[in-house]
Length: 428
Image (cartoon, rainbow, N blue to C red):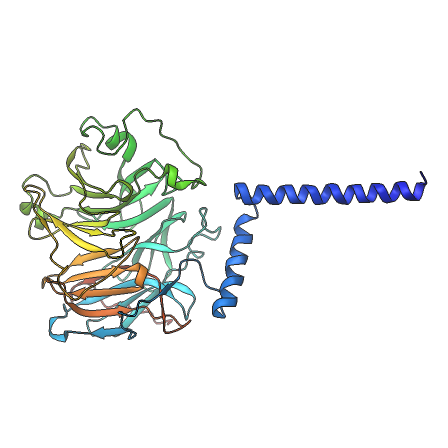
């Protein structure tokens, strides 16, 4: 064999070997989601959105709107029945290409907005890949508490959107007012979608923990928990993860997604509970439960009639209302149950409201009896009367096209005396 031929064979062999290694690594990237899987996935998603819509669009941002939904940004159906006060909405702002919270008055006029972009809060980016906020709370000082299901921080920003504090951790799904100057949030052990989750009570001024207890060790395995209400035995082999597991459906046994706190002004409506008790939702097993945060006792629990629910709330009539997503069935509902008598009501079903959110969703009963409902899968918020007839509808209309709404994840009503002063920012 000539020296020239030998050299050509060596070069070809080296190229073949390198190509083979690249091919094998490519297979590993796709199979195990190794680096640079997220970069490739993001680039592909961006290219696809550019071809379809003419701009880069984050995953899960756009919602194709059903024909039954108004194409007005703020549509009023019964002006005399609108609950007075302020309204806060959180979702994606297509014009600014960032996640945003908006403050509106009861006429639908925008008074203020906050930029809730993830990177100013965590320059390293989200460990679990998605920067969309899920839960927020507007505070009397004009600041906002915000958390991200797949992020690595919870934060408070001021009325000019500047970080006041950030706290590392996977805080997810819910931030709810506790007793005194405190709030409760779920904190996942590196992921929201696995076994170990903590209920964290924290100071909104500093982000510092006041109290914390664990779902698996303190509740599921707790001596005050009825056997098997969580669908697993206490001796189940629970696991910890460094980040969201590849097969998260397999390990997302409970999917804790909401917290409500029994406030002192409602405590006398629930004779078996006490002020400060926590109303918890576990979507995967259709379970709603009331837990004592001090003893970790499960005082009450019920699986259904809701399906894949979000956002159970204590209400002024002594009942518990539940946002029943009814995932896969095409229509969501607000179902109420009396925790002592087990009476079931579906008060909104006969009105003109029809809504569907296969996932997420929040609702709030208002002083005049109306209900405020956020429908993430439709990119809108609806206020309805106590019998389910629409009062107003707020659509997060997308700049991509009139047939689309942008995602909207949470909403809050506040009375006219809520703020120390109405939020504003001189730099805006």
